[in-house]
Image (cartoon, rainbow, N blue to C red; front, side, top):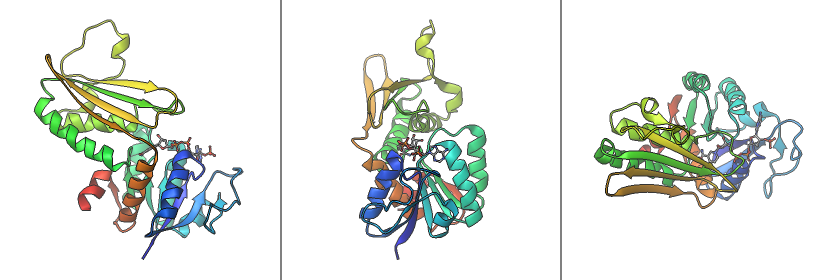
Amino acid sequence: MSTKIAVNAASGKMGQQVITQVISHQSVELVAAICRAEHRLLGRTVRTTDVNYTSNMSAGLKQSDVVIDFSLPEATMQLVQRAVQNKKAVLIGTTGFDKAQTEQLEQAAKKIPILLAPNTSIGVNSTLALLAMAAKMLGKKADIEIIEAHHKHKIDAPSGTAIRMGHTIAEAMGEKFDELKVTESRFEKRIRKSGEIGMSVIRAGEIIGEHKVLFALDNEIISIEHKAQNRHCFAEGAVAAAIWLATQPPGFYSMQDFLSAE
Ligand SMILES: NC(=O)c1ccc[n+]([C@@H]2O[C@H](COP(=O)([O-])OP(=O)(O)OC[C@H]3O[C@@H](n4cnc5c(N)ncnc54)[C@H](OP(=O)(O)O)[C@@H]3O)[C@@H](O)[C@H]2O)c1
């Protein structure tokens, strides 16, 4: 049986990429493409399908098993409220949630299945496993720097993926990321303290998403890197995880939960 998928923020770069993946995937069906009220796409047909772009979120949700969302935190919070009312699963690829918003998502996940993934690419999630391994072996001896680069339109910084990498590294070392992270070190006149995890951010051009972690020892450097070549890798992982999420009980899930269940 095919999984019925609604796409929120269907007009966005990722929304469009997810639609491409849903249309080409054999075991899913696009049932709704949701846009903001008064968007120029409203009423138009989504490519080769018989689905029209709509701003009627509740109607779109009602037809679906799961909704995929890549938008902005405010838009995601509105969507999740409606999804709870309609008892629908939500896969969230949006990044940049603050602590209060994350807590609200955790509360909502007591009522519906929610998968929150700052990065839905299978490659990035494999990279997290490599980072945990490296951090266990080298973390206490190395200077660790997480360097991320994205396009000039990206609003949040450091990226959700860079933050997730930091948490993964710190946990593997038995530490708390919030106590080790340093985001402003380049602008302070001081030498690097041992044990800190530095975060470096680049925003330029149309870079899709690049993450590199350096484990720098005195005489050698180990570097673990992931580069997205296009947005397809995010859409592919999001749709695969959404199919899984649609069959799960209420809960707050991650890509790791999906990948380890496969
Ligand atoms: N998890 C991952 O693997 C991954 C990968 C890439 C990107 N992302 C994240 O996904 C999000 C979207 O990225 P993108 O590159 O697709 O951005 P984008 O092209 O700017 O698209 C943003 C979408 O959100 C909609 N939107 C913005 N504010 C809204 C509001 N208040 N109410 C309803 N809709 C609203 C926009 O609608 P309009 O067209 O009407 O403005 C648009 O459809 C970002 O948070 C980004 O960091 C995550």
